[in-house]
Image 1 (cartoon, rainbow, N blue to C red):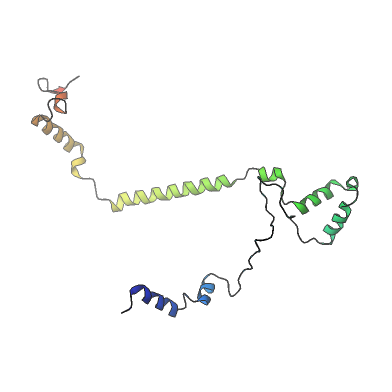
Image 2: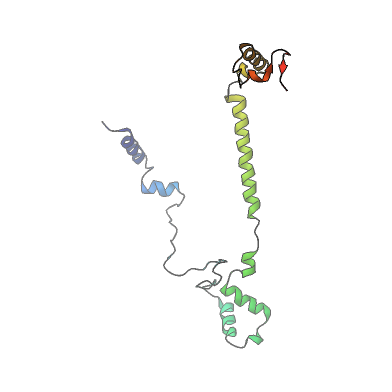
Length: 175
């Protein structure tokens, strides 16, 4: 007799859920698999702790950028500020000041935290209303008063406990 897990695998394979084509179709590749980057070569990335990447930001240059690179080899006094900035942007995506600029990601994080706290509050409220049983009658104030009266009448713990704080002559708590 087949065990339940092996039976499930057989059923799922028969329905083409575990087949390679089924997995590709389920993940929306449509027969096309994304090309994987070669991680053995240096890659560009902006990082504050390592501000000078190994490779330039723009690897393939168009004709205007190639002309600007040729102009760069001459005197830098002939370059305008816009051309200097364009040359900088060929090498780097962001300046160090732009990398250090604070982002507004904290708003998204705080909003997510408040959303989940609110959602959790709704779940707790729903459980208290619909799931948890009502409080037992022993937690009512009348029941507690009767219990205290009974404990005093029984004189429980008269030396240093509950009854030692009650004045039986004056019928009130000791001060």
